[in-house]
Amino acid sequence: MRSRNKERRATRRAAWEASFSPWTLATAGAAISIAFLFQRSISLRAIMFACFLGVAWLSGKKISISATVFVSLGIVLANLLVPVGKVLYQLGPLVITQGALEDGIGKALVFEGLIYISKASILPSLKLPGRFGALVASSFVYYDRIVEYKGSVRPAHLIEDADELMLGLWDETLGTPQGSDRGAELSSETRRMGGAASIALVLAVLASYALLFLK
Amino acid sequence: MPESTLPSTKDFPSAARYPMKKSSAADVTALLGAFCFFLSALEYMVPKPLPFMRLGIANLPILLATDLLPLPWFLALALVKVVGMSVISGSLFSYIAVFSLAGTLTAALTMRGGRKLFGRHVSAVGISILGAMVSNAVQIAIASVLVFGEAARLIAPPFLIMGLVTGTLLGLFAEAFAGKSRWYERAKALLGGTEEGRA
Image 1 (cartoon, one colour):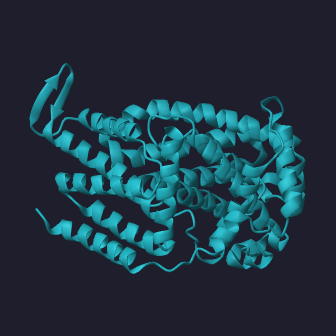
Image 2 (spheres, helix red, strand yellow):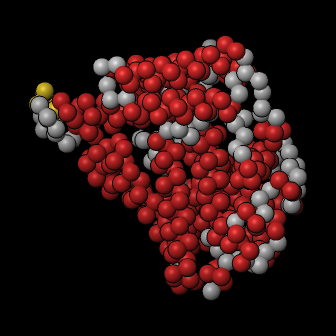
Image 3 (spheres, each protein chain N blue to C red):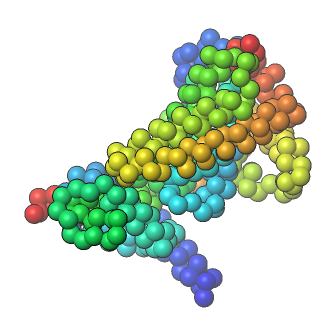
């Protein structure tokens, strides 16, 4: 069951990544995030949050509903500790006030909503521009080597083994780190987007800003 | 990746002040950046009550770089950690990236400033604790503005105690690693180390 879910998620992820060019998707994600931050209505924020959750699911990214609920409850509870506005309910020493409750729900929606829209709009193949981007790409190359490292890192000999790993990477790639899979992936990230995908992104951005004018 | 695509000292004008080989600092920065990614990935697996409440083990390479890299490359390492991890985890547009940027940059600048100010009179443990405490304090301040409001003061004590504990442990590890590691010795010999680290 779990492996079937994993397979489905991988299929969704592959389809999502094949549909969009990384920079266009990231730009659309950034534009929608800004509209989301400016949204004042809690109900519209909740609708947008639900859309972001759905899009993150479609993108094949890992979603944890329990973590979302747990973190959101924590944010709401923390905000309830400072009473603001009309008293709605009293639970022992905890006074639930309307202002604090709305503020907490709003903040929780923004916090979690931004995580999901970010997950959906940032593809791992996003290549950062310029020489700083090249430095990040180089780090990804080394990172791949660390992950692929065949030697052991034993807790009892952590320093010696970590040193061995660093020396191995250093000697292997000093000065001219060769491109790994991720490096190759990063260098060939530019791809053409289909018309439907472009239209969907434009509509999503326009809709997020149109919601700002609704009461 | 060909060497020419790596940043050179001319990208960071002040780097010209430091005696070092042109590509060596870029290589050390990239390698330490990769370790930041790796440790962040390990840290990601540790359950935590809030997404931004991190142990801070991914700052270990930055702590090691305090006495190793020239300032422009040291700052580049901090940015590589934040941007790279935000791209890997897909959190670039979320508050988590804001916490990560603020936490990492303040920790890096505090550790570097601490080393500059106190030189060798303070051990790596002291520098690490200083960085962790200031970083956590800044994150609490941001949490009070973005997420928790006034209630942020309630998470301050456990968050700061956590910083004290992890800062101490990371400092002890960094001290032991810097003393024993052949890689660290070679990298330091290659780059010349920082003036503060030599002081």
